[in-house]
Amino acid sequence: DSSGSGDSTGTVYDPFPIHSDTLEKGVLFIERETADYYREVHSICIKANKRFSIGQATETTNWQHNKTYIVNGIYKKNKNMLHLRLSADNLKPIEHIKLTRVENPNYEFFGTWKIKNNVTNVKAYFKSDYYATYSCDTTLGL
Image 1 (cartoon, one colour):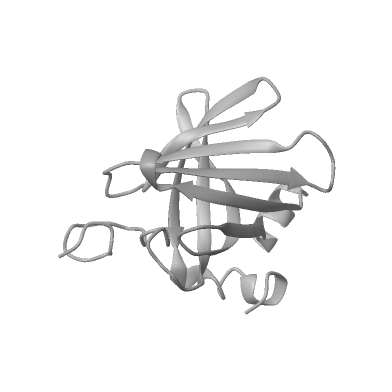
Image 2: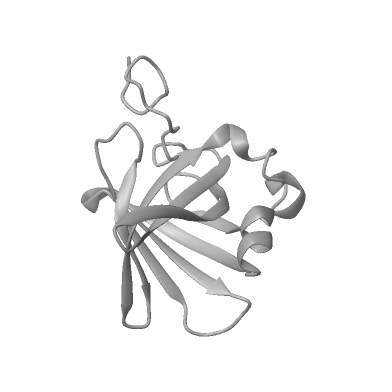
């Protein structure tokens, strides 16, 4: 059994495609810390391989938050970190999401979401089989 593959380890996410030479697709779910708890605030359609990631807000995020954005990112193997830059509706500032891989059955990443000087703690996980369910195939493409 491999950790993070949804097998008997009890993991609820799919491993983010940091080892894949081919293009992988899925949805990255991000929960932000508010007061004393985390709540899901973003789902991002993602296409990625081990070098680069691109994405955009899912239709669900658009409806719930009336916010559209695009995302680009890179995974830094030597630091086990996924760095995403998010630009909402071509406005400044660019938001920075820095996620570090962790050993947790419910989340693959913990990190921060920074907008100017405001920093929020976040948790994230990836689900490859949700790409079509969240209409990513019609918005980000097949």
